[in-house]
Amino acid sequence: MKESIINKTGPEPIYVQVQNWMRGNISSGIWKANEKIPSESDLADKLQISRGSLKQAIKQLVDEGVLLQIHGKGTFVKGKQLESPVAERLISTAESLLESGNEFTTHVVSVERVAASQVVAEVLNMQEGNQVYRLQRIRYLEEIPVMYLENYLSCERFPDLDRVDFESETLFSIMEQQYNSKIHWGKRSFVAEGATKSKAELLQIEKGTPIILLEQVTYSDQSEPLEYSKVWIRSDQMKLTSILRRT
Image (cartoon, rainbow, N blue to C red; front, top):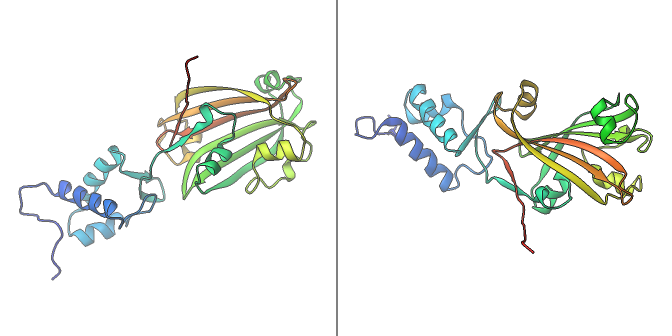
């Protein structure tokens, strides 16, 4: 009979012993950042404990921010929260991730021609109902979705945008290099909100989870609006930083 890792007759509660054992696996590198840990049934069998005690231990570590549960995928060791300078410099989220050396993947949800809504038309200085491209993407670090992006651009100014491979190309580089539309300045706003059902499904989080909405309009050197974007960011995975100087 194999020796149990957990002392069931000692004074320390079982779930606390499980937490300490899990923390040890993480600190020693047995379980690495962003790595999926074994299933609850496998862990319960290995530790010879009930699923209830195991769930209690995992819930506590999730609440502490040590572990991360993704619906339908399992439980992961939470990596270091990323810092992004998008609050201080006009760079895209992709450029920010590239600068920080983080490998990411992009899943294109859709690139479609739609009629500009009143809001989009006002922002892009066009008539309501004019054709715009709506680009929808999700960015992943490892297997974890960290942000969902919607971008709106004029079909007239950026023809054939739906032919671009946005899983390997960044929007800003395409705008500047292929369409000769140099981005000169931009305006950003940030809002904290609870994830709607649709956003929660895209970001693989619970409905109502706090997320950050970043809205941005980029402009040419002639102050012509080029692109309007809305980016929903998982605040448990990324924080926005800003360096300010008093003059």
